[in-house]
Structures are given as C-alpha cells and as structure tokens.
Length: 150
Image (cartoon, rainbow, N blue to C red; front, side, top):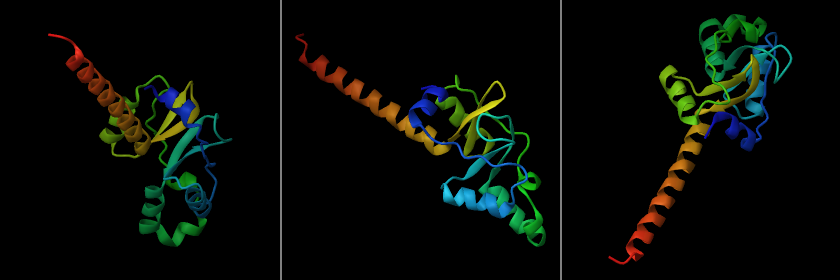
C-alpha cells in the first residue's frame, strides 16, 4: 500500500502547531489529541512545514533546561531538519525509514506541503493487514489445490 492511499483511507486529522507556541501549550495539544509528535507549520496543515516537535523533545527540554521551560517555545526544541516521505512511497519504505532513523513519526510531504503524518503504529497495522490477506490467499490456494484430481 502507498502512503497516500493510507492517508486517504485513514481520514485522520493532522494536528499542527506554530513555532511560537509555548511548550506548555504544545504538551497540552499532544495530550488532548493523544499523539506523540506534531508538525510545526506557520499556518496549519497544507502549509510549509518548519519542523516537528515530539514528546521526546519536551522531555529533553525538561531534563536539560527546566528553569527556562516557562519562557521556551516550540521553535527552541523542535527538529528543523525533518526526514519526510511522499504519498507515492510504499508503507514498508516509510516503516524502514522510521526504523533506520530511530523515530516513530514521519511527516508526509508533497511539493513542500504537509499532507499528513504517519506513526510506526500505522505502518505496523498496514503490514499486519497485508500479511492477513496473503495468508488468506495462500489458504484458499491450498484448499483449491487439494480439490483438484491427480
């Protein structure tokens, strides 16, 4: 399955934040929407992405710079050089990219515009469904083969 096809069927709402949002508000957004990372955009989904902020970024800021936390904003902790994939990429390639780079969220971008975000959970669920379909197909083939006269 291609990433773009998954995004169309998933009908997920991509939650983003701006670079000047406080870390407290970013944490609230992550918690409210039960997500682990948010693309950082000037004006929401569909606009150019400036970076990504994750739970790990917030924890790192808390652990290393707790005194400054109240005055810090997303721009101070976000990852600016973001690895992305495109809508034509296979889900397995997206999963491999996340595994290789050690992160769990991958923005989907086309023509510089954010289309959505994949989680490692999304790629695993897709792979499990593909495996189930393969197993069912092989089972049907085996059953049909046993019914043929020799």
